[in-house]
Amino acid sequence: MKTVIMNNDFYSLYEELDTYDFKGGIDQLGFNFSDRRITDYHFEPLKENVRVKIRYSGKLLNFKTITKENYDELLNLILLQTGKDIINDTKNTDGSFEHNGLNFRVSFMKSVNGISLVIRRLQNIKEVEVKIPENLEEKILNSIKSKSKVTIFSGPTGAGKSTTMAYIINKIKDDFKVHSIESPVEYINENIIQINVEEEDKVDVLKYILRQDPEIIQIGEVREKSFAKLLFESAVTGHSLVASLHSQNVFKALSRLKGLGINEEQILSNCDLIINQRLIPKICQQCSGSGCENCYQTGQDGYVTVFEYLRISDGIFKDYKKLPDGIYYSFKDQLIKLLEKHQISYESYQETIGSYKG
Image (tube, rainbow, N blue to C red; front, side):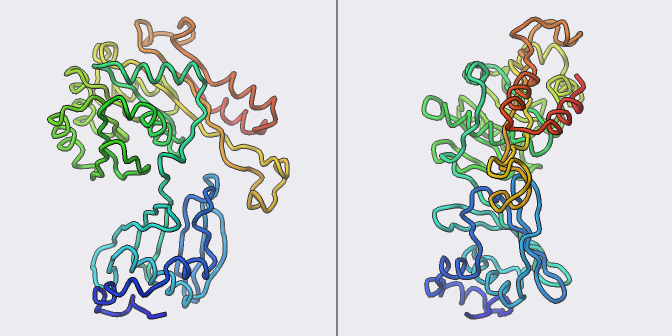
């Protein structure tokens, strides 16, 4: 195997890519990038070797240690596959590659001990399945199909908001013209127009998309006041917008919108539905939570998503405990059912309920 990462004539070697057995090289090094339960591989160069970590079910776990020679071989393969030249480039860089029909995003960063590498698997939209309560899924779909409305998906960091949005959008992709503004694109969907943008360019990109006569615009997380303002202005002009917010519950999402400069009148007029979700660790059924090879000794095997929602209507800015049925739905009942089926632990139940303050 040629060592190309130390060679200045990188692109002449890149032209010889066809001579490399990328799949065979990856498999020989013992990395099963096709394991769908592992979302990320972290390669951390140390002085003598390279530490490998994996993100499994949201947890970052120590996986193995490999020699620097083996790591250089892996890095060579990925650099060639992505067409990146981080050795001669003064900046850290990102790239992507395909392996066994799956798409991956990679991040390269120079460190004192060598090049740090993170590999993340990008899911194809066909893989995405979210179990949403049937009555809620219907409400979400009806909300997004409505013109002049904003639908908000909220939750803590890592709660799966992007996954749920991608799942819902895929349900209606054939009936509407959909544009998606993402930073970065997380789920490949060939049936919608996906635009990968930098955070600082979102406002300009949204303005330009409005000239493309879209029906539905899917947006990543709303962080800036200027973007939030344009978001609600776009709803006024007859577009349906789907966006996400970082918040602990639906009522804090309301406060977050107000903090971004959206007043109560705008929310009542142009926001239709706010969804909040949490990812709860599922107990591994093979070991009942004690830890085994199947769950990498974690005791858990994936997550289950629980939801709450708030239908925007008069009275939502007052006492939420007095809201009528159909306006506010809590995820407490869902947690109780999961607990009774032994799918989640009592500790997870207590932690989730205890962290909620409406």
